Length: 295
Image (cartoon, rainbow, N blue to C red; front, side):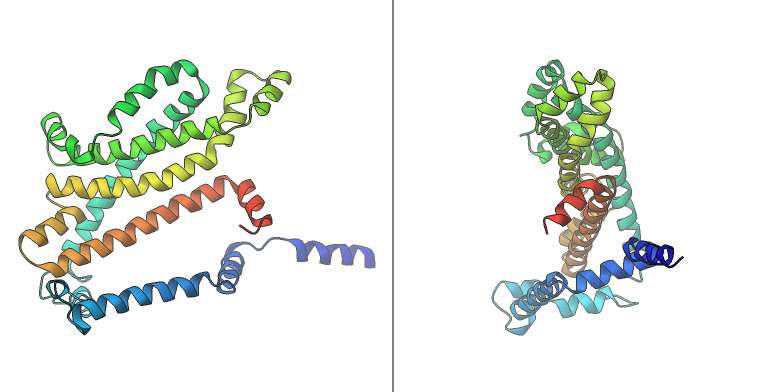
């Protein structure tokens, strides 16, 4: 009886925390490292430098930019002087439209780019067919596609989503292909010796082996999609954060312009973190391996 109680106690001590306990454990663990404090210091230094240049010392040329105090007054005001704040419905409409466009573009780029990259890495014939076209179109700047997209696709939504998808597609496809290339040939030989079919090799060797590269590519891809989207919204759009930024500039109201830029950076960071968390969930084996190496 005593032995069973000891064994049960040991089992409870070795059980991994779950739910709120897991969240609390991760917060405590994060606070025990220098990372959050260094992050806070970095953000604080950036804000202080920004304030010094624009409002503190009023350095030449920086006086044309709104400082952090002026931005905060409008951003968090129920009655903003220049029209945009967290209390205005228009602000959230711009965010909603941009996020909706990014969700569609990123889903299309991932749905097309990941399978294409996997097959390009796995099959020499597919690579010989698709890779030259990919490399031909990839160096073309995204703004060079703007006139063509406006001519080909009707309305505002089509060209904007097309441009964001196109930029994201190249990154996603190439990283998926490189992920397959990184797999050791011994895994393929071992699967062949065990009598695995081609589908089994693809499902159990190619896809898991390429996942680290795929999710690295998706994190880059979501960032590329954001700045491509903003460039497209500046040229072809009637709503969105990119439209907000260029419209504020054209009307010589600088506070909404900077608010749009900061909002864009924050949302882009959040979406990148979401992709990283999803990757960690699907690749828990790699997370455990890196944790053992203190990385």
